[in-house]
Length: 63
Length: 138
Length: 143
Image (tube, rainbow over all chains, first blue to last red; front, side, top):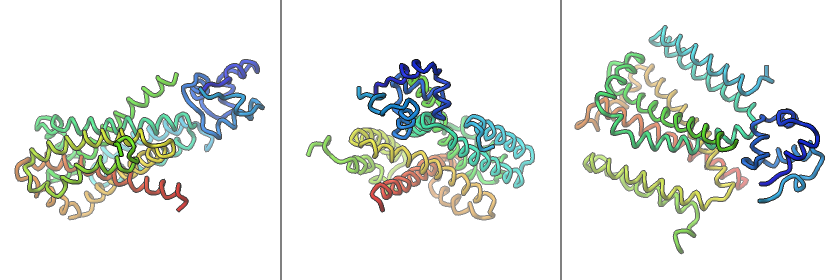
């Protein structure tokens, strides 16, 4: 799935490690999700949306 | 202690396991076997704790690797049976296991070795797949 | 109905058919023929398992993966414990030794014991995987 996480993260001045800490996941996870190599589970997708204060569909798009 | 990372729990699991295995080997006999089982229980308990602390990305990696890498390793181990059962390969290993178990009959250590062979084949398959999975997700 | 339209469980049955067909004949058929048939059965099982996998949906695949990871590895772990207990309890492993010895007329006892260890570990994992999968399936259906 495509997503806007890298852009949203950059807008807030967060590193991948910062976002990983907020989500309680590894930096590798954040990197893989940003690059579209790994699709997060629904609970994690909701956590990501909560952190960015946006809706899931505004962050993730189908390929 | 419960907030230790998954990596820390894995280190505790591995270090403790090997220390106990070396102790089991040194002591030998039935007490050694009891220590070896303690090592197994230690590894299982702390590996489970590490699993619980892992994020979903790493859990996916390990599940995928155990399923596909492990199964592939199992198939390769079965395919390599004609090589593994050559007397020059098998007999020394059976002798080594027989010494470790203190067995008199040749069948029981051979049986144990067969089970370990399959487990090791899957472990190798899992490891290769796990590395490949992480490389593909960069 | 073309083969590609068969449900996933049908592929499982097709995959297991050659292996199950061999079981009643292992003691009467020459061991070389058993070995050849077993090898072919493994290839057959892998091929039809792959076809069945492609017919599975996401939930089905997740169930199989969980079942193999937890059921298969727990069963293997349990088997290693049982073997160790057999080793320590006097006379407990004699039944196993006598059973394996029955097959080792033509081959050295060590080689036969090794192959039985391999097969036992693989079969124990398969049983553990099947039981875990049944549990996943039952939970999914709300049983």
